[in-house]
Image (cartoon, rainbow, N blue to C red; front, side, top):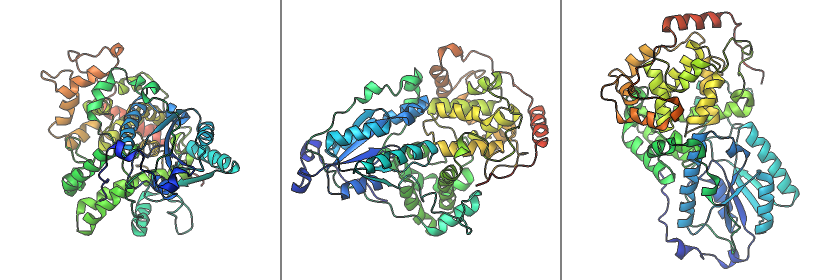
Length: 497
């Protein structure tokens, strides 16, 4: 695994320019969800140009649209990355506004010769980046996009007929067989310009405004930045990896990597994770194969979003628009507040509110309960997750919600309805997870359970002295109602590519 180089003090490196760099036009490195130094192709290309590099982050419409927890967590990552750049003698320039006019202004101010960035694959990012590239090139400015967010570009993994994969298993087999490009080392230095453009102050952006009093509760659960991401990876590979196939679904165990948070903001690259785990697989580790397959699931989500952009906003399979899901409703509000009366579902919702993450098995159970027992549209749940998750990944979450609901690609059979009670007995057999997150009715509630009550809005009026909520729906009746609804709709089909 590649480690970041030892960094000299900023003062010693701030004027580290070669004669060629001193008079050269700079290039702009437009940063997005790629806040790292190691294995950063856009950064590497910027440095390889031989020109001074101006790192820039733009608070544009995409940032503004983020949910409260995601925007706050991005702010933490930006602060961490700015400090990392400063230690290397560089800076992070912050600007707010639509990407194209901001970049054109920066190009003019800095006399920049080019702009480099890492590709995005969601519909809005593609539209934005296409317009930016066209305008820059028309103005005679070099504009280059680079890989780095995925193990393989969405157009590189094709079926034998040249189409895209709609089922995960063959996608995984093909990507594994083709291999993953090597990760890039961190540059030893970043060439700096003679003069820096003006920068906004990060604190003026107030990226944590939507968190309210919850920010102080959620903060200790975050492991922000590239250094901690690499440390987290090493700890997982040397610890839980071998038992990962057996323990990954145990909600009561710390058996997963936790890297989703760092992947979401590009604090570590998927290629670095792949090449750190691959040697373990070659040595015979049974855990490494399962872990890598889960990493590829993330690529599969983005592969599907690229080829079927409606994945995030409407039912992926044809014939589902008439399904009698309810829109937002009072039961969904109880679900959001962790007050459904189903202990495992409520514990999962509270874990997310306090930590910014939720165990994957718990996500499936909570999502199944909302979409099937409560017959509520998956988009209602997706919207709440986007508000609360600090590891918010648009493609992975859209795929996950539609997989559980039955309307998506590679979906669970429509008749698969997770029973929270039996799932709890299997994956939280001693009740440790539920005890960790549920305070009401517990004579000695855990500190984590109490922290949920400290984080929620005061108008929710929740207290540890409250009685546990009564179940919203009898599980057997809820299952029957869902099965009846699913049985009345026509057989699902895949969308037309």
